[in-house]
Image 1: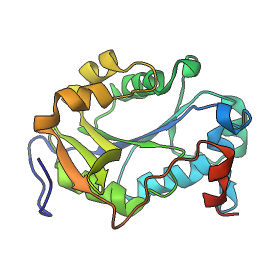
Image 2: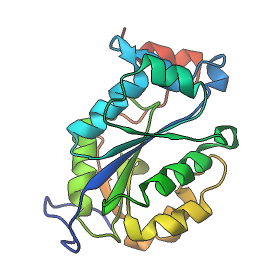
Image 3: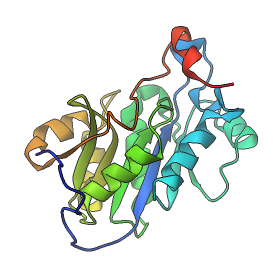
Image 4: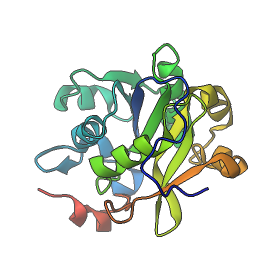
Length: 210
């Protein structure tokens, strides 16, 4: 299913769309520099991602930390965010997704929009586009695409959180779940408003701004 209109796809059970930022990575291929603390536009990268979620209409914002969590909390302004500690962050992104969805279980949000801290090319316009395309259903399922290739943000309706969390393993996150439910997945092309590159290795650091 591909999104082609600006109308919400399902008005069922309206509620807030929470932002879920996965920012626990230790930057192993970056010499052990935690990705959340990389500098972008003069501030830690995690702050940029939080601002992106808020500007895209997400509230509340939950931030999953792992590597150097104490330093991140001391150096980054995460005021108003729910900070989630993932002691198992070395197990991969799946553990952070599980921790984040668990933290949202008591929230009143109808869905969670997931972004990764190491993708600063994905801004508020992509967040807003995916959020609006998915509608307000607790069963919503949507993902951004870039030239037809699926990426982030990914929006998960609250009714799907238990299954997604149960299946999230290693660095796959929700990939397996999305593949199995691709017939229900709303795909939202965002290549005209965002770039889905990752900051993974030293050669990617040029993409960060001052």
